[in-house]
Length: 323
Image (cartoon, rainbow, N blue to C red; front, side, top):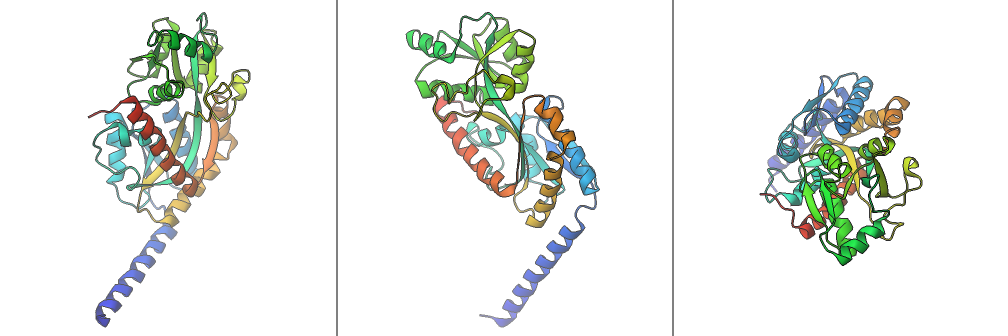
């Protein structure tokens, strides 16, 4: 080995390591941006803002939410993938982050290679709802009708490839039944179509479902979390109803560019963890039916890999691919 090259190489390594540690020690010294890859408004955006506020207070520098919608969250996600790995640009992640890896034939980043996780924040179980006077009284009614008359029942969704669509696809595939998909542009019109009797049922998140249930306009047939929500204590989980192992949740997490130094990730995680553990953060979210998760980088990285694999298989089975 060329001794001079060895010395130069090892010196460079120690210089880089020292510089990284020094940068981490002073982090943060300016505002951090949290890119939310969809327009402002809605529960997920509100959760991101609540977390950003708490993190900023604990870090001593503001965490500023930047809404960058478009392309099914791809535009905002790609913005973060191309950003410097210095901890000053973070990504707000929801199920489309995992789903898009298979849903789109081509995306400008590598889902599992270009990002690392900071924290899993909360999750919201999916609920199956029907209008209050629907003849459907249980999920077994859905199976019975669909076996006799495949495609007769219709289900609404927020759009092709969204969590509600794929959650329904997983539901039907596990019982080998067929329903007719009616996609809408967003969750609100999808839910309203079911309440108006234009579609028979809809899968959507608990905080949207509870609004209609509490208003006396809808009934829940089943919920898709690991266990029953205290807000729907009398409603079985799909696992209990005979869909063994079924689970579908809308999760919310924070990630960063993949090569962000672990020391910086740990600083960000500590601020997020303390925020999530606070009463100011938890109370308004628990009241909406959300479940506090608060898992760190190692657990979150493992989970997102599982999510990409799980939803990827469901996308392939459903045939829901987009150019």
